[in-house]
Each structure stands twice: as structure tokens, then as C-alpha cells.
Image (cartoon, rainbow, N blue to C red; front, side, top):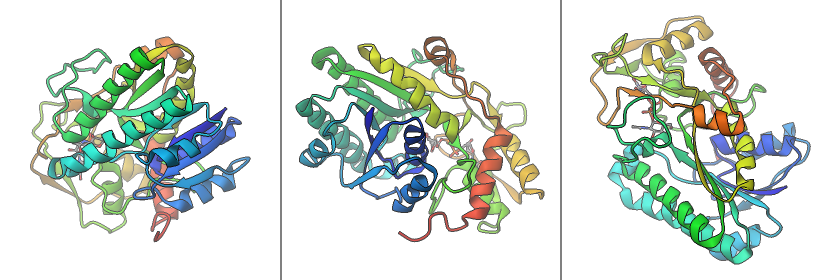
Length: 333
Ligand code: UD1
């Protein structure tokens, strides 16, 4: 198939582009390079049987997207902003980029007659009140503008399926971690807020210590539980989900492992991989953090046979390799 991957120069996108190329698909990447990095695609090309084509631009630019859609069978739409904290400060950026981007993309797809779309959604669409584990039919009720834009995007896809004959799949990602086993593609982080990159920074002296955001939660060791998933499992989930686009309608799947890990378990895994303890300080809770966020991955497995393969140790070991072999990420843009 000929595929268009928006956000294909980003962290998850670069792994996905490589998987699509290795599976024999053609890939056009549309990326404005605001967070993605052109060197990611150079690294992908070195590992893949053929390169992806890169179109630099904005998904909201309908004439540009129409040109990029020539001959395309399926769109995999990853391009979006994803920082919860930033979305609290600047909701309008999220409305414009995430919803304006999807709206432009859907307009261009309709005009070009491309009706199959796989959409990157998030566990952040669920209500903080939803019971654990989170099922696809658990209560949606995001408490951040970021999560709200993703939930609205899912609604837009439901309407396009109902009214315009689209087939759509929304994948609700849990917490992606890790890097490609080659060590040559990974997450290019400038000022990370996520746990694992921050632990690795503490281990390599780029942070004085990792602050544990709250150790008084009602969990076994007092720290929050999350469903971390290896980025290679997450990338493979997209290839598996392509099969669901053969069916009309809008299909929603959690992509997680179903196995929660605490902050302390992540710290222990990182220390084991690095061979030294992580400098840690105990801090207060971070506003907006849920004590537990874990997927029920049963629907994706029942419908399409997907199951995550990598454990926490594998995630952290690959992240450590990427981090130590690429201390500047992909380097300056
Ligand atoms: C965050 C986003 C979520 C996004 C996900 C993946 C928020 C509220 N949620 O999820 O929308 O999909 O990243 O990109 O930002 N922690 C520490 N110290 C740190 C950093 C994190 O103790 O320095 C703890 C947090 O309190 C949390 C866990 O580690 O319990 C994971 O945090 P993080 O990696 O930021 O992911 P989420 O908050 O789950």
C-alpha cells in the first residue's frame, strides 16, 4: 500500500515509518518538523529497504495535503501536540494544531477520495473518575485541553464514518517508552517531562536527581502506576490495526500492556540497566496526575490478535542504549 504518515519524523512516527517500509509499503511523510527531526528519517532510510518521501508542511494546508495524497490508500495521522501541561497554558495552540490539523486533513482526504484513516489518540481521553482498568467503553471525560482535542478528533472520525463512508481506527496510546533495537532511532527530547527520559537524565548527570512526584498514593509502594508500552510494540500496533480499516465504521482500541508499573519499579529497572543507582529526591504530587492509569487491552487482542511483547526491562534497556549512544538525540536541527 501507499501510505501517508503525518508526524512521521517524530518519536513514534519514525518507528512506524520504518515498520511500514520493512513490511513493503510505500511511505510519504508529512511533517512540519516542529517536533520531528529530519535526521530521524535519514536514520530510518539506512535501516529500511527504501526511503520514505518527506513533504515538509502543515496538515492544515489543504492544497499541500491534497498533493501529498496522490495515490495514497491509507493515512496514519500522528501529527499533533501532546504536552498536557502546555495545553493547560495554551489551549488555543491545541485547538488550532490538533483540531485544525485534523479538519484540514479530513477535507483534503474527502476531496481526494481517500477514506481510510488510522488516528493516534491517547489514554488522556478517559475521565479521571473512570474505574481501572480502562476499557474502550469507559467514561471519556478528559481533564486537559490536550485530551479534549483528542477526544474531539475521535468524534470527528465517527462522523466521517457515519456520513462520508470513511473507515477509521483510533488507537488510544498509553505510555510509550524505549527505542528501536538498532540504537539509531529514538526520542529526540529537548526538555522532557516524561518519567523515563528524566530518569535517564538523572543517571547521566543532566539532572541533579529525579524527583518522585508523590509517594503517598494509595498504591503498594506509594507511587503512581502507569501502563508503559515499548515504542516498537506501539508501532507494530498500527500495522495490526490496518486490518480493521477493511471494516466500515470507526473502531477504537487501547494500546497498552495491561500490566501497571510504579514509579519505583521504573527507577529500579533503570538502575539495573545502567548498573548504578538513580539519584532520587521525594517531591510533592504533580497536579493532575491520576494514581493509576492502566489499559484493559482485551478488545485489541480479541478483534485483531494484538499483544504487546516487550517487558519493562526491555523498554528501559532500549531507551538507555539510545540515550547513551545518542547523547544529543539527533543533534541540532
Ligand atoms: C503523560 C501525559 C499523557 C501522555 C503521556 C505520554 C500528563 C498528565 N499526562 O502521562 O497525556 O499521553 O505522558 O507522553 O502529563 N513522574 C515522576 N517524576 C518525573 C516525571 C514523572 O515521578 O520527573 C511520575 C508521574 O507522576 C507519573 C509517572 O511518573 O506518575 C509517569 O509520568 P509521565 O511519564 O509524565 O506520564 P503520564 O503523566 O502518565
